[in-house]
Structure formats: C-alpha cells, structure tokens
Length: 94
Length: 143
Ligand code: SF4
Image 1 (cartoon, rainbow over the protein chains, first blue to last red):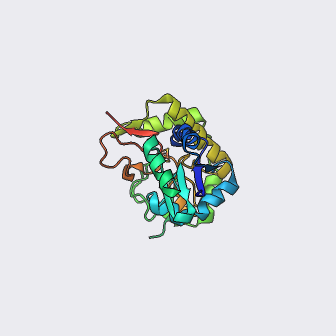
Image 2: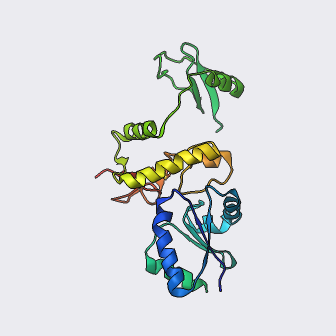
Image 3: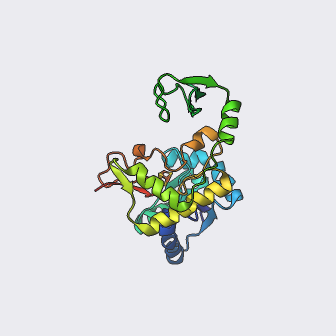
C-alpha cells in the first residue's frame, strides 16, 4: 500500500473541511493517510518542508495545506476538493 | 533592488523601501527623508509607541483595510474566527501573523509573502475569479 501523507493546519478551514472526507475515504477504501499537523508540531513542519520540491511543484510553488502527498511517486495535491477527486487521487497512488 | 531604511528629519517616521516617500504621510513635509542604518531604524522603532493589537483590533484593522477595495472580509463568521485564531497562534509561536493555510519555508524574505494579509490579489483562487477569495477564504470578492 502506498505511503500517503496528509499535511494539515489546526486552524485551516480547508483542512477542517477535508478531514471528515479523508476519514470516510479511509473507512471505505482501506487507504491510510499519515496525518501531520504542521503549525503546532515543528517536526511535522520540517517533514513537510523536506518534501517542498514535490509539494510546491504541484501546489502553485508553495507549501499549502491541506497537502496530500505520495513521496514515492513524487505526486501531491493541495487544497479543498470533493470526495470523488480525493478518492481518485488516492486510489491512483496504490 | 534592495530595500533600505529612511527617517523623516521632521517627525522621525521610519520608512523601509527602495526609495523614501516624497511626502511624509505623518507631518506632510516634502522630501524630508534621509537614509539611516538598519540598527538606527531598529532603535527608533524599538523605543517607539508600544502598540499591541488584539484579535478584535486586528479584525477592525482588516475591515478598514478592505474599505474601498473590491474585496471584503468573509461574512462567514465561523471561518473568520478560526482563521484569526490561527493567525494569532502563529504570531505567538512563530513571530509573525503567518497564514494558517500555508507553511512557512524558513526563508525570511519568502515567508514575508505569507504574512496576513498577504497579496492574495494574485492568487489563482482570486485573480480573474468572479467569486474569488484568498487562499484561506479570509477575504472574498465583494458582491
Ligand atoms: S491567504 Fe488569506 S488568510 Fe492567508 S495570509 Fe493571505 S490573506 Fe491572510
């Protein structure tokens, strides 16, 4: 199974909106995201920064949250999206 | 071009930029700015008025900022509450009012680009978008 991350911020409304969709996706498909909060956990922030080339390339040059990342495939997608788009992206990774 | 520091010789306003303002916005003297060092600027500002800004004052400040612009603060109160909380947490924990929906990369100049309010008018979520908003949704195009 692919090694997927979700980088999120505690006070980011997009992340708040996406979290239940991520949880639903995990329940329905068995896909798992390693969820890392980045504004209050410096270790997670450093981890996200270490993937900057992959994330920035897919997210308008910036470290936007939420960021969904597959480091092994150099693929990422950021921001709010509907359930089907997130599901397509996640299933494409496995 | 590199920004430098300037001081008004009449009222001691400090300006940081590639050139000084012709007209001092405080005392209205013309061509009153003289170049100073970063250290002088820091000392003058450090001894200046100790102005703090509460979350409510920040909200009032961004409301005033949007007046006369084609954008406004998002009427979604719950969203704004969450964002302002994050902006203030980031200031407390990381020094400046960083955007809660992006992570700073730890390059000082680059990270100034995500201090709130940022120049969201160039964001792909705003520019040319009829119901555009800043990346976080704190500011939305006025209807
Ligand atoms: S995207 Fe919005 S909330 Fe974030 S820094 Fe810019 S103006 Fe502030």
